[in-house]
Length: 216
Image: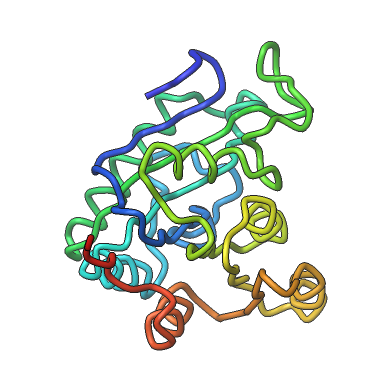
């Protein structure tokens, strides 16, 4: 699913979102345990509550889209085959809980990358919004009603730059929470939560993540 044969991955497994909202997720530290450069299928471990949260979005027909920086590929720690193996294992683990991802986008470009992957500030690398915008264009997603959940400030910054409605930071450090709140604007809401399950439950309860509206 490489789209330029070098550093960008775009895998869309399901059709259009009918103009409704999507949930954008970072991968490591949000869906799976962050092992600091996850490149081996054997190291994939779902975080508690993550699969159930994704399944809730699936039931509402809210597309779940992973947008992940892959500096480990840029640095040569693993390759796209390793990434694909990790994704296949993750997909099986989610399926065992009745959950699925609708799309996965990844950027392996990095300022300290090797060879052709050495690209500073690529438009797809978070905090730039390129992955989010590319997914929305291919899936008919309403960015203004969509949300992002991540474990770093760059995740929320990408959501802000893409014009999302808001973002949730999964972090307990008060310094990170303060940084996240500094991104809040009149149109971009910033929240914090201990895990993906809590984040999704809050978004569903408030009607932010809902089924697509019927076409008149």
